[in-house]
Length: 178
Image 1 (cartoon, helix red, strand yellow):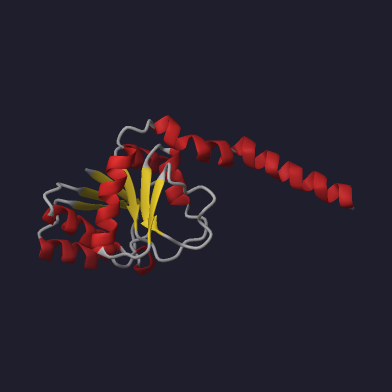
Image 2: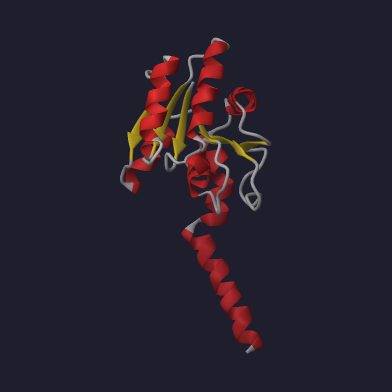
């Protein structure tokens, strides 16, 4: 199973929880791999932990990449996993769904607009068991879902055309009241 995370290797993204989740999955006989796209202050500490746990071949930190390269990493994965503790819009999860990949993330306020049971599993805590169980559930739930179907809601609601239409509607309403 190939997992991908996109974001800073920083405390708020909880990279150690992701590493512990890969270990939990391995302990249950699943050869899970995680590719982390992004860089940050915890990268060296994470790589040290991987060596201590013997997971250096199961988790790969590719560093920062150009934005146009991110879809390649998303499409190469089966699922998106990022146990972040804080997000605003959570663009990387939206990008993953737009690439047709299911997501496993922690439940955070304000993320209900595009995360649905059809494309994501939201967990209450970042423990390895909780995240690992959600990864297994997501793998089963989304296995036969076509990427085009997975991406349809995000593309419909957040495409350039859809967002432009929403802005135009707001402007027309404001002008009508002026």
